[in-house]
Structure formats: structure tokens, C-alpha cells
Image (cartoon, rainbow, N blue to C red; front, side, top):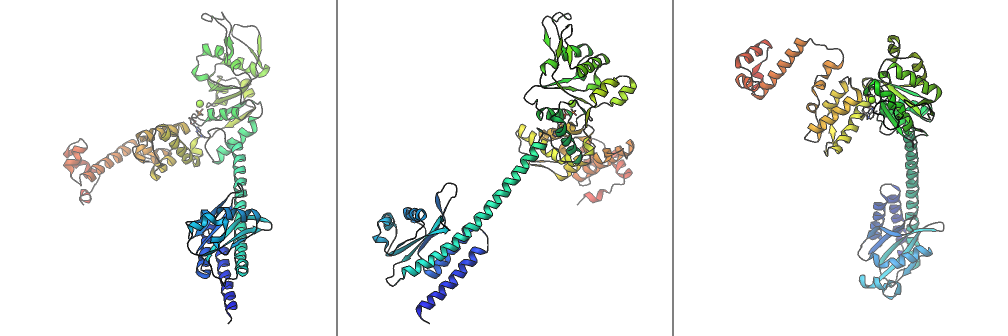
Length: 502
Ligand SMILES: Nc1ncnc2c1ncn2[C@@H]1O[C@H](COP(=O)(O)OP(=O)(O)O)[C@@H](O)[C@H]1O
Ligand SMILES: [Mg+2]
């Protein structure tokens, strides 16, 4: 076979090999490195590099190279090729003024090819190749060969960028969706994804933008105040004040002047005029917590504000307009209170326009883990601790406990655990005793008191015997009891001491 044909066949199989490398996927950078490796094996190139321009900055940089060391010295040539979109061939590097700096770095008589990576008219990189000078080399032919390789590399790069931009598009879309969700669901610090809490989010969204009075009901610690905040901060009044009044904490004699303010001289000690909470909340939201605790006289006044949207200061005659959105909360059974005569039915009717009911934590157990993790993070950083997680048994304990104090109790529990935890994991023994017997307290107590005491006593004795490897005298010392009693109990509970001796 003539030499020319032999060479052509060899190059064809080289191109096939390169094509394989470029189309099998994987990291582009390593594919490009393999391409240069193939060229070294087949074409005996002494040096090579692939440059790619950054579509945003227009700057190019090396993404793959072979026989490095003096790559940077050819930068001006590469730049020219990328700018013009035309290849440069230098048969004798020693004679090319463009490669002056390069000359010093390379050794021997070298030929240099630099070919642009292009699609259509756009250049987005270049390949440079260096081979030793051969007088019989066909530079036209070699250039055509390297141009074919450049177009394959360019194609691979283009595909990769398309995939990349598709990935970016998906990322952007995802971000956008998340943003939308956040707008819908991120009400300050509310955690939870359970069905009941999601329906609470929906209700907040529905009502926040309106001026409707909202009644929030739920057991103590379920997050009523948090919801009241969320309503305010998601309303058009968000930039105006959010004022809270704890009706249960104020004595009957003070509540009216707190709510409505007073005029100078309204009563002994009123030596200046004072604004009430209704006035302070002007343009914003007034949150009346524990509304079920207000007395009947105050209820009448509140009813009037709700009906007429105005009020008077204590001891005053002028009516003051109230541009205030009312959000009220209670853990009381208001219907029952009406029956008992401690809550006015007409006020209830006015308040009961839009009611949000927050279910107790035990009815949305899927939120327990999320909340626990949230509080773990919050209090770990607050107390400067590096606690990473909650152990599975501790989580189980939290999951089976009935949380009568709801989220507030869970929050306190985790904060306490963070404080007493010395390692980086919260364990069962970091949780309070009420949770230790979670199974028993989960529903109705399943053991009688004396049975529970017995079982606890038996556990204590077994633990002590484990420590002392079945030695009853030492177990008695540990338990600060007597050997006689321990022997008696061991017999009573039918504990086999021999099994602790190993
Ligand atoms: N869904 C929740 N996500 C995060 N924290 C919550 C959540 N619900 C309640 N909390 C927290 O639990 C504690 C008690 O909530 P709070 O709104 O005062 O309850 P309530 O007013 O119903 O007694 C607060 O510290 C609050 O931040
Ligand atoms: Mg509260």
C-alpha cells in the first residue's frame, strides 16, 4: 500500500477514536485531554492545548493540555486565531516573530498549528498543536486534518453548552417556582408541611390581603401568635405597626385604658393624656391575644369599635376613628363561654367572620421532625453548640409523645436538650422524663401506678446488676439500698443474676 494511503487510513481510524471519546459523554475536560492523548500516540505531537472562550466575559482559557510548561507563551497567537477565526500554521517556530517569547521556551525545531473552534461564523476557542519539524511534512494536509478534529471538538463543546444552558434553564425555572412557593408559603418563621398546616397557609393567603377580622383558634402553644404575625406581614398593612395586647395578662381595671387610652385627669394618676393600643396600631394590625379572657364590660366596648370603627379614650368625649385591622386569638371554647354567660354572643358573631383553626401538634405528627430540626438549628447556634442531629430513638420518643403543650413544649424540650447535650447528637436521655415514658403517656395510661412503679424498680435493679455484673451487694450500694432488700426484690421480680456475670 502506498505511504499516502496508509497514512490516510491511520488518520481515519484516529478520527473514529476521537469521535468515540467525544460522544460517549462524561466530563468534557477529560474527553479533551483524551483527544490530545490520542494525537500524541498517533500523530506524535509534542505539545497540545485546547482553549475555550467564556461566553460571558469573552476571555479564553486552557481547558485541556498536554506537554504543558510553555502554553502561556503562545497566548498572543491563540488570541489572534480566535479573533480572526483563521488558522495559523508556523512551519519553523524559530522564524516566526509572533512566537518570539515562545522560542525561548521550546527546544529543537518545531512546527506549530493553531486552529479555531467554530460553529458557523462564531469562534469559541482554539486548538494548538506542536509537532517536530519535518521537511517532507504536507502542511496543507495536516492543517485539514487538524481542522476536522477542531470541528469535532467544537461540536462536542456546543452540545455540552446546550445541555448546560438547558440545565441552567431548569435551575432558573426551579428557582422561580421556589420563589413563587415562598411567596405563597413563607410566612416569616412558620415551619410545617403537613396537610393541616398547609390548609392554614392557604387560609392566611386568602385572608391576609383583606381587612377582615380574623379569629385564630387553637390550643396553647400551637402558633397562634405566629399566624397573627404572618397575617400582618402579608397584608397591605405590613409597613404599619403590629400591636399586641395580651388580654389575659391585664387586670380588668387596666384593660380599657390600655386599649383605648385615657385623657388627662380621667382618673387619679392620669396626669397626662395617653394613647391606647388602638391608636398605636393606627393603619396597622391590632392583635388581641386570649380574647376569651376579657370581661363583659370590655366586650361591649370592643363590639362597638367593631361595629362603628370608632372609640373614645377613657374620660374623653371625642370619638376617634379606628383604621385598625383586628386579629384575635383564643384557646377557649367560646361557644361554651357563651352558654356560661362569660362571653357575649354578639361579639362572637362579629369576630367569627373568618376563623383559622390551628390543630394541636399531635394531629400533625409529620411536622414534629421538621420543627425539631428547626429548633435544633436555632438553639445550637444560639448557644454556640455544634449539635448535628437528633438520634433515631430520640426522634421516636418525640414522635410518640402527645405534646400537650404543642409546639411551645417541643421548642422548650429541644432547647433544654441542646443545653444539656455535650456531644454532637441529641440522645433520648437528653429529653425530659415526660418523654422517657412516651409510650405509656401516648394515649391513656396503660399501667396502674403500682405496676408502673414496679416496672421502674425492676429496670433500676437490672441496670445496677448489669453494672456490677450480677453482684447484689454492690448493686445495693449503687442503689443506696441494702443487700437484703435487693435480694428480696431480685426474687420477687424473678431476675436471673447469672446472666449478668459474663
Ligand atoms: N409552625 C411553627 N413553626 C415554627 N415555630 C412555631 C410554629 N408554631 C409555633 N411555633 C413556636 O412555638 C412557640 C409558641 O407559639 P405561639 O404562637 O406563641 O403559640 P400560641 O400563641 O398559640 O400559644 C413560639 O416560640 C413559636 O415561634
Ligand atoms: Mg399565645
